[in-house]
Amino acid sequence: MQRKSFHNVMNNKNKEISELEIEIKKEIDSFYNKLVSIKDLGGLEDIRTEYTGKKSFIIKSLKDIGSLPRDLKPVIGRELNTARSKIELEILKKEKFLKNIEYEKKLKNEGIDLSLPGREVVTGKKNIISRVIEEIEEIFIGMGFNIAEGPEVETDYYNFEALNTPRDHPARSLHDTFFVSENILLRTQTSPVQIRYMEKNKPPILIISPGKVYRRDYDVSHTPMFTQIEGLVIDKGINFGNLKWTLETFSHEIFGKDRKVRFRPHYFPFTEPSAEVDVSCNICGGKGCRVCSGSGWLEILGAGMVDPSLYSFVGYDPEEVSGFAFGIGIERICMLKYGIDDLRLFFENDLRFINQF
Ligand code: 2NL
Image (cartoon, rainbow, N blue to C red; front, side):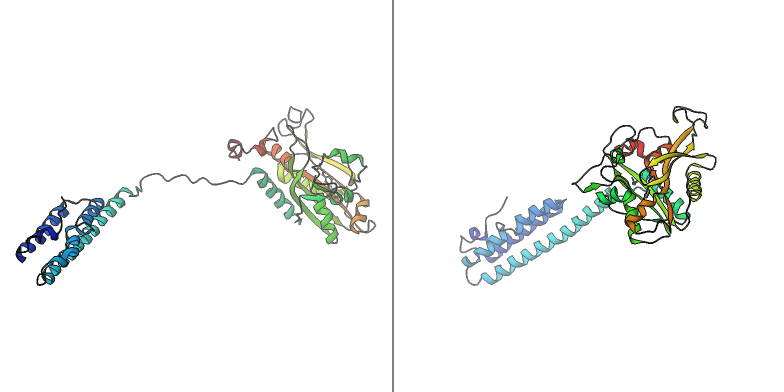
């Protein structure tokens, strides 16, 4: 119960000063009685308000002090202020004490049990395509090649024109191209990177250009985006023997020395002569099976001697230099290396697929 204020006590003007002091002492006693039973900070806030708030006995009495006889004012005023300081100090002490207890409790609850097993940290993994690109890059870097990169959005000129594929060339229909505008397109191969490189550099040239390429196709063996590494070697006296050695060496590094390699005549608009390169099928050992369609061979890349007519686009003299080029489809290499039978698996990002590697 909140007591009224000193004012009421003073209604009887003759009240003795000792009686007023008893009132103050009663208030302090009642405060101490309550304080000992306070067990938490919430309860402490309640008695802080009850004994030092605007409506508390002490504060109300201090306000009403003007109504006391002149000689009592300083004495009672001092006693009230002393009582107030005492109460405030006790509350602060108790507050510190309770906060300490709560902190200890919190520490205990949050205690770390070192015997518990650690939480698994889920980390990302490099995509299998990226890993195979890196593996292929290492092989060619080992042979002295440099890596060249370029834009995925290309001009018609660098993607087709400068690669011997003018608009009316029948080979254009081989690539279903994503056009951005009449002359801007998503590159269908990484050869434009090599044209740009030749424009800026003189032979000897020894580069590979890895990257994403785009074609309008979608089924088990085609996706609208896929990954390619093209290679280009140009110098004085480069011949088909150099091409054969380079690609045989590559095939053995990536698939193993036990695999046979063969070169089959083929056609590309930018190379002459051209070839496709096969490795012997590892499933049937070359006897013929479902994977190699009974042929005993698996196609892994296309290549050829750079058509001399290309040199006019980049200012090289075809009488001075010659070279070879090749193109490797990364997804195809991955499929053969890891026995993956659907190209679309690479792009679906199913964790069950990704986590296998
Ligand atoms: C394939 C075939 C090939 C090239 C790419 C090329 C590049 C320049 C000049 C001449 Cl700059 N040729 N690239 C040559 C032959 C084949 O790719 O089947 N790729 C998956």
